[in-house]
Amino acid sequence: MTQTRPTQERPATRAAVIALTLVLLTGFLLLPLLVVFVEAFAHGFGAVLTALSEPDALAAIRLTLIVAAISVPLNTVCGLAAAWCIGRFEFPGRGLLMTLIELPFSVSPVVSGLVWVLLFGTNGWLGTVADRANVQVLFALPGLVLATVFVTFPFVARTLIPLMREQGSAEEEAAVTLGAKGWRVFWHVTLPNIRWGLLYGVLLCNARAMGEFGAVAVVSGHVRGQTMTMPLQVEALFNDYDWVGAFTIAGLLSLLALITLAVKAVLEWRIGEHGRALI
Amino acid sequence: MADRGTRKGTDLKVELRDLRKAFGRSKALDGVTLSVPDGEFLALLGPSGSGKTSLLRTLAGLEFADSGEIIIGGQSMQDVPARERGIGFVFQHYALFRHMTVARNVAFGLEVRPRAKRPSRPEIAKRARSLLDLMGIGGLADRYPDQISGGQRQRVALARALAIEPALLLLDEPFGALDAQVRKNLRVWLRDLHDSMGLTSIFVTHDQAEAMEMADRVAILKDGRIEQIDTPEQLYSNPATAFVHGFLGESIQIACTVAEGRATFDSLPAPSIPAACRPGPAIALIRPYEIGLCPGTGTATVKSVHEFGPTRRVRLIAASQMLEAIRQPDAWTPAAGETCGLDLSRARVYPSAME
Image (cartoon, rainbow over all chains, first blue to last red; front, side, top):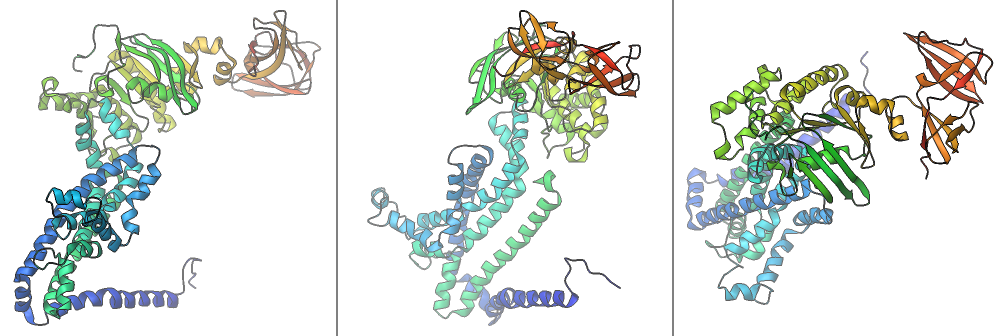
């Protein structure tokens, strides 16, 4: 006679739960993903290539890459600084700062975009300053970068803060007593200890930076071939009933998501498996 | 071992003058003055929260006192940052660089030197290797910290601290995380190392046996102050305060009253003893082996006698108080049920803690 542990469910229950999970996974995650690629290739490989070589599509891809190339490094540096500050020191207002860092997560992306419109609009606080300096912020690259930076700010800091708190600063103190200067300590002790966590945060930050729609949509102005990032281009093409075009770009974004997912899994495995040694 | 170039002359006296530091309302250091001669092995002993770790970290420049002075080898450390003090520091949990091999951990202090003072690459590797050999862990050079045992990590931490040829070696609870047997071996080994390398060392511990066995002198800390600093022998036989008496070894506390130079025990039927402390309520402290038992009719009744190795523990009841005396093998010992006289003349009298 087989005995079941108190925490073990009956086989029938287990089978039902597993089946439900599989159905949900297939229906809500796998199927839509499949549809993206099926629709993209509905008119053959040639149509996809044509859609990809459209000047507007190429411009959208280029713009997305440029926005990510600026905002991701910016947020990496700022996130590192914030995590170092919060993870290593006790000071009044630390809790508040921590909450502020997470603000972009809780604010609707549309609002995240709107704040920049209000700030840099013709009547905004900084609008006149930007005007006088002859810098076009809204409906141009600077606006897109600002919105993206705002939305993706928490990723790096959020992954690093718990890690740095757990590690403490004993190793850095040891390095200092051995005669190392600030930068040396950072490059040889701090950074190697957090490198996998940092990479993980940067990866999530990048995925969001390239995929952001809401905040970017507000500040973009939707000028085709000029201020359209990939997600915006998808929507525009979709509204034009250009299925192949829309799904091609969407497929490209999905591919990015899949790659991100794979790298993330590898990173999580490294962090988990080798735990303390490699983090 | 490479020449110990940073040591200037022979006098590396460490002097602390009236160090004070407060965290909010609690005082970590409350006027610490201390002088450590060159070559001494000093232990800072005290209960947790007594300020011993703060004192060590302040010496290393990892923390800063609110006021007071630190002078090492005649030079004020006021404006000398931690990285320029040249002090070896062994951290409580070793703080080894986890992503570096043992050899690279040890070499770190030499690698970060400014180019002018940095030995060549092969020279650094050679020195790291000879230090590891000296520590008896030459075979571990290519391992990572998480691949070696606690005792081995301790040795790596020590090798790393010694690589910079420190003038002064500071150790924070160096044996705290080790099991008893490893601890005992490392103690002897560390003391030998200190002597053979001619180091000046200060180490923090809360384990009194460790401090008393290893150190030349022991400073007893309490609430950010040094209660007493002396050789282990003196501390044990002449404790300056009731706290030191109670902290080092078994003590029996008896309430008494001092008047006209004599202390009368409040509730114990024993003859009064001379006392130098000021009149008023006081406490007498005595160690179990210092309690004298006199044959004949007396005020104490023997409850039981336990033989354990060479000593005998005698449990007595006197005026409904329980006392435990330890008798030496050759001393007269009453049998259970007998009565005897109490002699507490070896007790030390201290002013009452409540002032």
